[in-house]
Length: 205
Image (tube, rainbow, N blue to C red; front, top):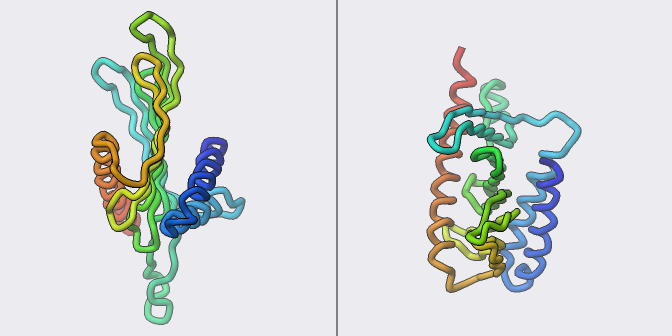
């Protein structure tokens, strides 16, 4: 997981370097990602919540999904109530498999107000193309958001025939990216709701 995340950070830094000259929003997202990674990789203890799901899916078999919530907490009212805590969600990591030959990693990054600002997905899979040729593909998507609006898309994907498509867009987005980015934002909001529910459940005795 660390190796993958370091690769994400490196790619994020490179892509940010390209766009940050003209768009400070990208640089800000890059800083938020670095902040989250600093917390995530620190040797010192940091709070984290996890959820794991093991299911049997039709046609694909066993699927394991592990969701990790990276957050920080502080005393909300230290003078009035030392036990009242305030939580901030930084990043959500989702790792799952579909059958034995496909693995997925998805990351959602949030800003100081817990608004989703960055989405990353990585799919590693093996399959046979139409000519019976084995394809080993790594598909990656990076979406940058500002105010719930897609501002940059960086995509590197391979289709069912083994043809690779690699591009970067800051306007005139493809319909596929617009649809996937809307899903990413919706999912990010759902994970935020789930995290808040986990915090409430943690307080139950």
